[in-house]
Amino acid sequence: MSKKKAAPPETNKAVDALYKIAEEIYEELNVGQIPKMKIPLRTKANIRFDSKHSVWKYGSLMGVRSAKKLKGALMLLRTMHVLEFIRDMIRENKSSTLREMYYISEGWDIAKFHAQDESNLLAEDLEVITQLLREDFKLRPEESGASVIGNLTLEEITRNGERKRINCRDDVGDAGYTIPYNVEKEKVKFVEADAKFVLAIETGGMFDRLVENGFDDDAKCILVHLKGQPSRSTRRLLKRLNEEMKLPVATYT
Image 1 (cartoon, one colour):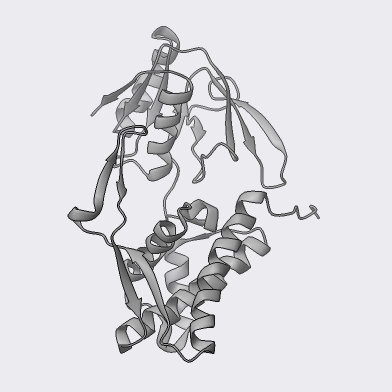
Image 2 (cartoon, one colour):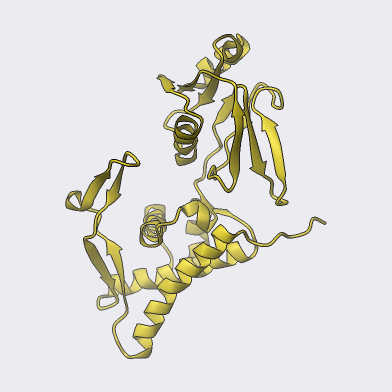
């Protein structure tokens, strides 16, 4: 039996952030106040462009989710269940999918979600409030990972907590290296890349054809299969390759 490893600092940070949300609600209940939770407004007026990171971010305008009305009270109740669910996963060093969380809510009585969109949006709310990623909460989408082929060497933290060095050309089969749901630096570290650029490919057929023809070797590039609409982890990996490895990214659709 493998030895269970301790949760990394990032997950402890996530637990602390989630506890803070629960404590604020508890303190309001304890003094007889109607509990509430502040959330950045998801409106066009509350987004700004961060030129340093080239991304859009929420501004300072805040909305309030209050237990004053039944709908708000139910969402706060669901939030408490989700916080507990995430805390338990982090403690046990396990992960879950967004869809599994939706199904598990069937056991939360009146707090159960009526559609997966509701549970997905709540997970996004927690990301915005805590300024953490759902990967920090051990949550991932219900999807199979995209693939990478090329002379890229990286180190990935295995489920046993060990670092494993992988070359995405020499150490994988024709299917390539499967991109995990968490590609942050704490999980995946780039070691070196002997490539001139990255080619992101939408369709599996074209990706397979280029792999068969050895295009990654001939053109000295890294091939990434997007699998249609790319997942967050795939987009994040491409961004890291561009920024950290200074590789230009081209897209073939």
